Image (cartoon, rainbow, N blue to C red):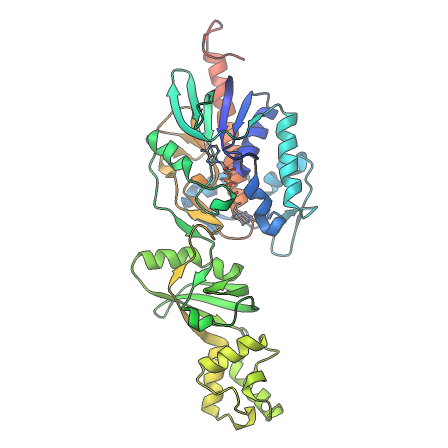
Length: 422
Ligand SMILES: Cc1cc2nc3c(=O)[nH]c(=O)nc-3n(C[C@H](O)[C@H](O)[C@H](O)COP(=O)(O)OP(=O)(O)OC[C@H]3O[C@@H](n4cnc5c(N)ncnc54)[C@H](O)[C@@H]3O)c2cc1C
């Protein structure tokens, strides 16, 4: 079967590109390895799908930032929202600019993309794990692991990254691109939980707290975030902590140790707060002393970290002991001994180098007629809708790039050409 375009990977980018290109009248095949498209999309934003972010800017991206900037210029968040709205997904934004479908359901986004593809005539071929992609005279031939074939005048690779293999990530796209002469930058997990010594967080699993969390290398603050953190068996999770993972990984890969400092009383004088509290509640044992400022069990951990006995009464604390406790409340420092791997990560840092692509069209500079979009490329965004914004904007750029290429070919190709005319 011959198509104008074969799109490899039916995730966010693949579905968006397929829909956009087919709506322009092109004959498109969407080749998906799994038995259904868009599995990862269903898990995004805790099932609510944080589609984009109204405040997205180049600073929210890492890796080939200039590519993210070019994609944002061509397809800014409002234009991406317009694309979804045209598919029947009205979008709403929260106070932080995070954009969701009005239904707050990732499933409705996936349904709209699937229906959009069907209505535009995209041929979706699931259970088609592309094992090789070969450049032929008139385009590209994809061959599946089982020997099925699909031929397209141009091809788009959007097979995603390595994060969340349970949802289908396998890294096949890197191999396909490498074989066609593309460079792949080192990949590591971004947006993942931080690992700390387990004894430091023992007993805190499942506890959530609002905090400012800073990533430190020595005394230098590498990055600071604020929001909810969630303690896990082996460290600290939650969006604020996970945002630090990329930088923590980079620092550790450079051989530098790093740590996180947690402040559970930002914007206030923690020592003054505890002094007043000790005066008001002199009979309260330290067991319960911080309860209400932070969850009780976390309070007990901070008391222990300050070297104080839990059965001591607040009224007997010396000024120095109060200072020590305030120091833990506003600056509990834990060494970061690692970052969770791809199994637990949301996004891949690194990927196919944008040096091998024209960032205006996502066209390969190494294999004419080949395009790439989404997480397979060396661009990753922070948490907050930035990764789906990149998936969408790079996919829409690629769809435009493919359309331009096909349009030119249509004009240039002689009428009796034997190479797949539609
Ligand atoms: C739990 C979780 C929550 C997230 N929440 C958000 C969020 O709310 N907002 C946000 O912006 N980002 C979020 N992300 C990140 C976002 O989902 C990804 O960055 C985005 O899905 C990347 O899109 P993609 O199309 O490049 O890759 P994917 O969506 O991963 O799609 C790649 C597709 O290619 C297929 N494929 C792979 N190899 C082959 C092959 N050889 N042949 C055929 N098909 C193949 C895969 O099966 C898959 O369907 C989240 C990620 C996770 C894991």
